[in-house]
Image (tube, rainbow, N blue to C red; front, side):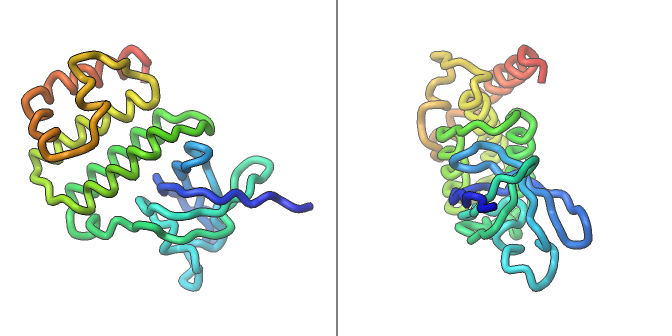
Length: 195
C-alpha cells in the first residue's frame, strides 16, 4: 500500500526517546499545525536525519501519515539556530515559547499566521543581540502574539501595536514601559481559558 508523502516545513518543538534509537517529535508544521511524528533510528550516529531534527531546528520535512501517528521520512535543516549554543538565556526563551505552543495547540490545525511568526522569531533572534531586559520584553510580546494567533486574546486597542507589527528594537522598548500590562493580559487570558 502506497502512502502519500507530504512535503512541509516545521519547527521541532520537542522530542522524547523510545526504543533503542527512535524518537517521537512534536513538530509545528506550516501545513498541518502541531503534529506528533516518529523518527526511526534518529539517535543512531549514522542517522542522516539527526542534525535536521534536533530540538529547536527549523527544517524542510517529509511526512507520511500512519494509522495513529505521522512518520518522518526525510528532513533537511533550514536553520538550527546555532546562537542557542552560545546564549543560554535565548535558549530558555525559545524553550518557553515552544512549551507554550505545545500546551495550547490541541490536534492538528493549520495556522499560517503563527507559523510565519515563528519564522520571524528565528530571523530576529539570529540577527539581534538582546540584553536580559530585551529578552523579558521579547518573551512578553511573543506570548501575547501566540495567544492572539491561537484565538485566546482579542485585538484590543491598547495591545494592537504588539500583535500587528513586526518585531523590532523599538517595539521591545515600547514593551518595557507596558510589560506589566502585557503580562496581566496574558495571565487573564490563560485564566479565562482555564489553561
